[in-house]
Image 1 (cartoon, rainbow over the protein chains, first blue to last red):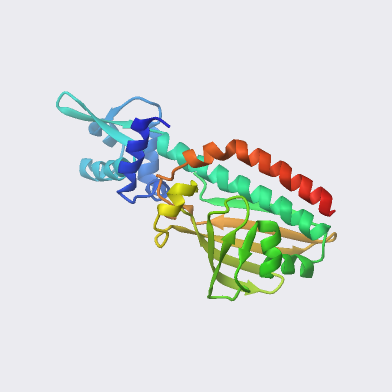
Image 2: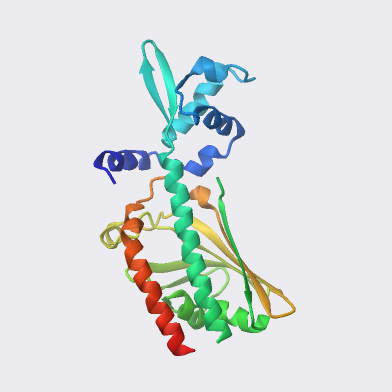
Length: 115
Length: 154
């Protein structure tokens, strides 16, 4: 892993925030859906078509930012938000790892029991 | 994203045999790869040392339920890193935990075992996965060892 990525992971660890928990909300999931196209969006763009206020959307964006799924970038006087898939990739890799461990343990259980 | 792992496996053995393989601490130790200090008791911590494949890692689970030949479940911690040096220097008192459940059902040919592990939303997204990646080669080698062991034992 690159040094830059590693220090970002460590910084994120300090927030003690959880990727799954951050995604366990319909509004935030919808925001991630909008941003996952790759195009950075302003708060106005993200508020458009939503029943929620700018403030509410901003609060949700901050939660996503705290777990590193979203980053804000300054474009002139405006803040744009962009999607970063790294934490989600990391979590799904971790789940794959645990899942694989179980496949192997259960295969050992099967031989142990059936022999 | 899925917060649950589920595995279903058919075992050609009576439900009583499978129950013993899961809940007798010595038998679980054999196939799981852990040396446990004593029997499982609901509500109590079960401690031991992993013997395979992460020998430097401690086993610490809290047994939740033991409903004979039906349900065995416990919670256990997920350390932030399984890398030997990082694990040794870490404080594991606050490791996030998940719930592991083994459910058994009698079938025409034996027993259906349904394993679920849930609660991954407790786990922060900063796990040190490079340790796992480094281990990938080692894993393949270890799997061959098991195959050899199982073939010999059979």
